[in-house]
Length: 232
Image (cartoon, rainbow, N blue to C red):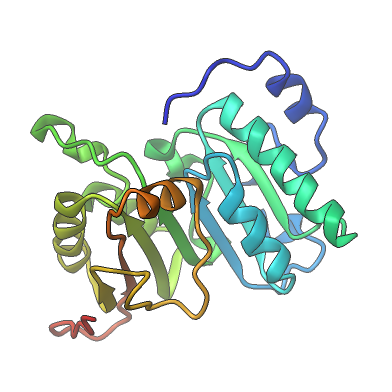
């Protein structure tokens, strides 16, 4: 999603208590940065304007979250959305951090010591042109990076409106040692999540009559073998 430059975004982010300006310094130490370091640690890659992560984090105070995006303007809007959501609930945002970083270089800020239990990838750029497909957040190249900081049995929850990206992503998961736990080609008619939190893109696509595709994938442990998918 393209968004206009917002001159207020960088100053607001740098003054924000839950914005991490230098995430490289927390590589391997993210859990200790939260007040409750024993909570599960989940991340969202490409948080956009923050509608998804703000609702998810406020409803799951027993989980710690890190939301990543590359664009200051996006993160500025996400920061405001998180503040608004927590203020309405009269709760301090102590279980969430946001940071600006290039996800292609994610191994500079996360490693095996961070023990991430779950990754959320929602409506990422489909990069339809062949030479650009390696930039997809679900591409095997990226998945191999995520495996460096995901715990064994760690999960990826993925949603998209793009048919070709979804089909390709299922292959990427299989190739990279993930087991497809659940798949749906129409999330709003055949849900696979206990509770589905809509993103800004999702709401728009549903209103246009576009079906939302989604899956849950789990990183295999020591055992090998063919994965079993549960299609709905």
